[in-house]
Image 1 (cartoon, rainbow, N blue to C red):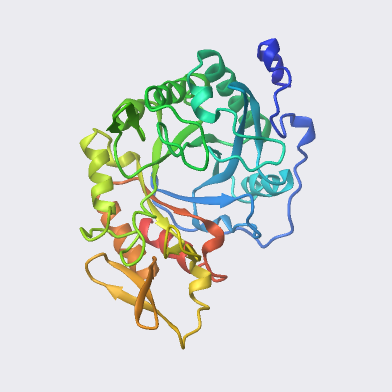
Image 2 (image 1 turned 30 degrees about the horizontal axis):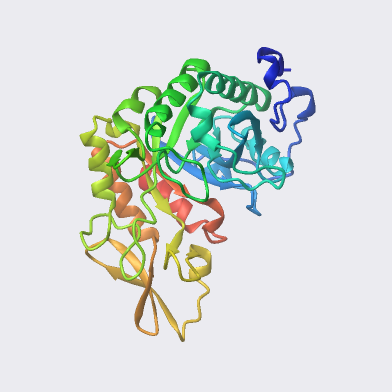
Length: 369
């Protein structure tokens, strides 16, 4: 039991699945695993969600970020964390290491509250401003990794100094405290475990009362890699995951340059690939999974149009631009570009967006390996 290492105030920690004896290994009936050819040091990372309905085939990725776990912070007091969704779903994903012992699995922490027994009580903002809470959280994370025999922590705080999804924020201190949180995690986890974060497309930005987003340079010494969220960078009539397109609000090139200019090595960066198309930030449907795009009514929609500027495909509806997305062609181009720069590899959001044949995940693997 790992609660014994915490102060008395944390004896009621809410971490789900914290005891080794409660975690029987239950192998699934499955076909023999045959590893795909890979290049040492390169990474293909898949986000796998708690609401997903499939058990991923671990052949075509090296890492998983399981989405999500959420903080329990009540009235500014850190009380622990829990998995979102059912523990059995997480157990199924953790058991993929039986099939592929080389697979690395990280648990990803979100700023969003989903569990019915939780509410926004300060979140990452409250947690990170307290040295006591940072240490307690880091100890809880280490105990969780040990209990489940998984490999690391991914922090998906979107974003310090900015309130999204009702999350608490304080631009005056959040960005600096995010660095302290990552520093504490590294000190507690040591080098045995992986540490990553979901990276915004820009460096920290000054606002009237402080900063927002992430201090890329300051946090760099503490992380193994960064999952660049190079998607949702715009919406129709522009491409949301353009490689290089000044028509869009932002693109992959400008994102990677922001990290390079902050002193981050290319070898720490994973370029993000969306397994969905982005139509709008306000109008429904806001997005469509790739597998859904393939089923659109061909009398209304035309898919696989190609935009040479952004190097991405797009969908039209009755002849009008509807959404940009990624397919095998754009993934090959992005992968060749990223690997050519010396980047660590590609990551994608999220596994269940792919079609039944695994078209996109196989394309990602081929582009990196």
